[in-house]
Image (tube, rainbow, N blue to C red; front, side, top):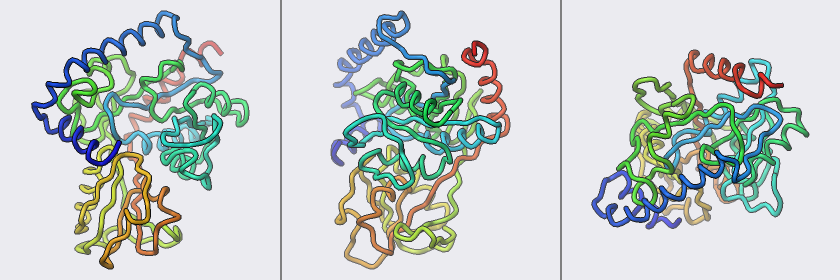
Length: 335
């Protein structure tokens, strides 16, 4: 999606512009399609694969970023500490590999495996496989690496793989936008879908039974030389260019504001493929970006480019709830 089109839909979905009403008939059609599709999976008319390990889905019901990837990394580390051998699967969005599944590694080309997969491989400390068929990716991790639990980065609507635990993340700032299904609104599924999942996590101010997700990012890392780091507070009152190609770039900008960074925002579509011109400016100001942007800019960045890695912070109760659900899962009981 190009920048103008991305901005149009974002402002319509979250700015509650009346033009959204023109798309309502298409949203009705979308509602029919997703319900028929779900019915076919639930009743065995379309195949849903069961892999040889329990599967934890981390997804959302809206388009765009809600913090899935940091939470997936946190979960993988939790599971490893609990004695499991976790593996992560992802769609590999934007990847151009000639065959699937692909194992993502720290030195993988983000153009091949996708930007999020490379971050997962760099940070999670466990095997990562990507591909459009998540069941095949999961089975590859089980057979090649002995993984005994699979965490799926996104895939709440990917009913072609059976799951034992569903975790849905809600954006605490934007929630459900105008409340309409695609394309009139940002919803992939109706809000009522949240009643079916096992856990709801809120990235922001949680309410009711939602578990809060807090993010931490106190350090900036040089894109070209990752051994060079600086506390983010060192950039207080410094003027920079802030580059973000995310589903919700305002979250990154708000984070910079908390540390007093003065910035000129440069917004690009989610999963944007950068060119050197996109991150080169006529002045000598530093360029600050997200880790998701940085993995795509290592070959075109210069030494004034920095990124801010984000880490999820979850409560002890959340971790205990996940481990308890895992122990009670159908797969654990049967095998």
